[in-house]
Image 1: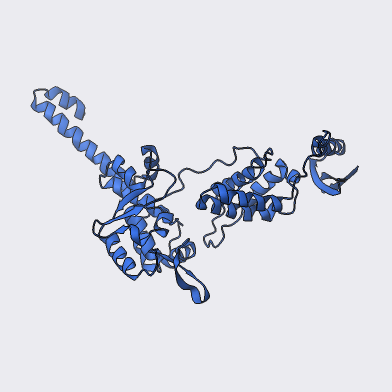
Image 2: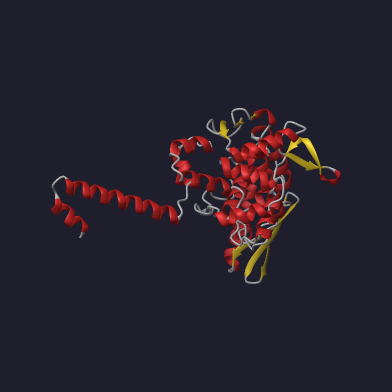
Length: 367
């Protein structure tokens, strides 16, 4: 038994089956640390007392390779891509550890360190969001459960912010589009004027653009409602006429690839994040917003223009109206206008009552 101190905490180190285990006990008392070490040994050895020798657990990097191969077969491309990105993050922390070395304490350290990291390619000082940490930990849980193992983290993780989205103002919109490069300019314009998701715009196929009937057919999505016809206004129609006329392959927005970043007509664009962040910097917009927030802006402006919620849900590709309501963010001006309309209605109703012979009720109501 080997117990030693690092700072104020006791650590233990031992070998089992040719593997060297070195971990923190999390204890400041030596006796308590010895008990933690003993329990840890039992956890590792308890599966070896049966008649059949259990299959040894792999290292985390090996488990990730097996998990991603499984995910590619079982998940949609977008979901598999998300797991791949999450695994790149997890490998930085757990890559060479054995699966049974990934303890709840180690995961907690990952959580606290990860949430304080700066966003990659961000120039506004923003840090990794709780939602991003949650997605990585969800992938970690799945890596374990897919092998029939108990995950080293609970399901309830960070409390996510539900009101992080915002509506882009008219002044911000003007500054942004003045600074935006192509194809970001056209992509953001389509999102703002149709409410389509960025991923849906990236994957628009020439064959699904109906210039005659001024609509775009979106053939994919998580729900049946996401597969829909999206109407085009005059702004989007002009963009599509130009883009479809210039297209040399199946996609409206081709991905730049290869030497010199030439256009590849057979691959659609996957991201415009760098161009988006650059546009925000050039426009001098301090309060960072996501490309996706143009979709929220579309929903809010549509509601202010009087579009009913059922029609708006259909345009956004939502199955439930409750989801649409999360996308509508009334501005202060919109609320003031609503209050003024209600006041005018009440006054009209009171005067109507007075004209019908109830002047005393009108006098009391106006007091």
